[in-house]
Image 1 (tube, rainbow, N blue to C red):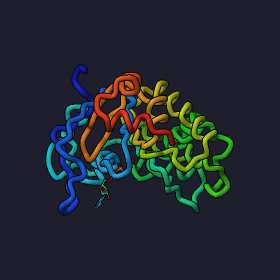
Image 2: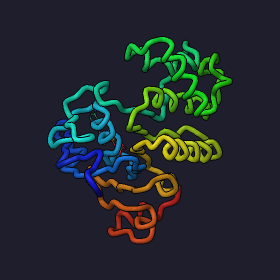
Image 3: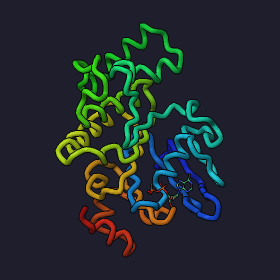
Image 4: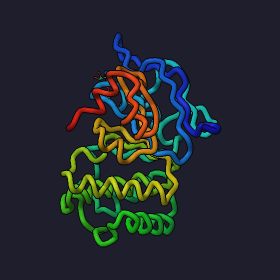
Length: 240
Ligand code: ADP
């Protein structure tokens, strides 16, 4: 890899006596779609939270585009974040939900209107702009969350099991939609999942987590065909 866009060096996270991320090194290229894959409790979410700035590492460093970001608050990191429980504001329309991050940043009104219209178009929700979240399907709500993460044009989008609450058909549609946005916008996406198939079909590269360490990292095909440890072989071989 040329100069990595995101780099973790010897990152450690402890909660009291529990080591959740254990001297982890990871480089992510600009424009890459990387999946963090592993069983529940292996430290994936914690790593994402440290990248987003919601958790601080106990040790080590995190750089993004040459800037050391550990220690910076979340709003200084310019990253879009999408979680499984979308946390939309129930009393606000779709339009206002999506506009929220721009209002927080003090973006001028006309600029907000333009950007919100553009991003709603992108996720095919232009016709739903005046609805409240409760009047939308699960897949539509998830697309609102995606629009809200993209509206301030972040370079990096962090996703934590974003499709876990959707049924199979919607999940597959959203997988295609996210892949498509990734390609069209040239985003760098860090995508946490415990679903092997999702990681294999969506990502450029997979990091397989086990107890706060990366057990193997490589292209989906490599991970699938050449698992390097019994843990990886077993985890990839499991069906959901
Ligand atoms: P994953 O995303 O792979 O399921 P997590 O990063 O969510 O794993 O969690 C890893 C471990 O860290 C788990 O044992 C979890 O209980 C623990 N953990 C996560 N956040 C906290 C916290 N704020 N306080 C204490 N323990 C935590």
